[in-house]
Length: 269
Image 1 (cartoon, rainbow, N blue to C red):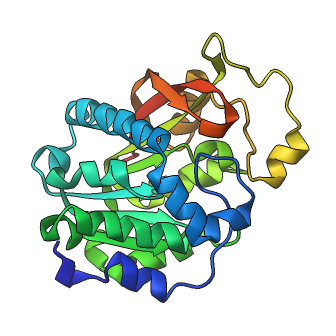
Image 2 (tube, rainbow, N blue to C red):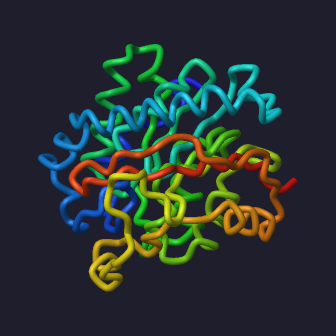
């Protein structure tokens, strides 16, 4: 798949309807994600880039062990749900024929395309974006948007979902969407917080204002256990290939580092 086969990230975002809903790691008011100023500040944050490097290192280390032929043969369609500026996704360019950001923020889609262009035409021609409202739009709508890019990218060989799950009001609905946009026996990868996981010396979520967090789109403030994620994957017919604490995640202004659980799963056949 090359850039000629479907719209660029900039093209896709220009023609998308106004999105809404949270899909990123920071716990900001929803409208903040729609501003160019916030997107640029987020992208320039060293903590954001450091965290992306941690995610990338895990992906490059673990994905070759997942027996995913398309990835190992460097011909994978890779979708990043909640990609933001797309640093981790772009790291996987050598393994991909298409790199697709699915995000609700138009400014983030533009940043993703800009970062892809900075990586050179050999990357930018494979970089595409879909704007999707995670709260109000349906699973079928995101599938239709992927098909509109090109039927060749309607399902991914590898789908990654970084620090998005704790924003999902209904975790099963999120996972069902990931399964639907991932090929049978394709690879689904989560990175998210583990419960009770603050690194010593930092303040934990011992006491939280859940109503306040939910207003900011945080529905699972304490994160997810390995058991919870294993049950989730198996409930949808998949198989967990690897699940363990992978690194710590810097939440920047919150003043907390959290242990991050990485879950690599095989989609149902």
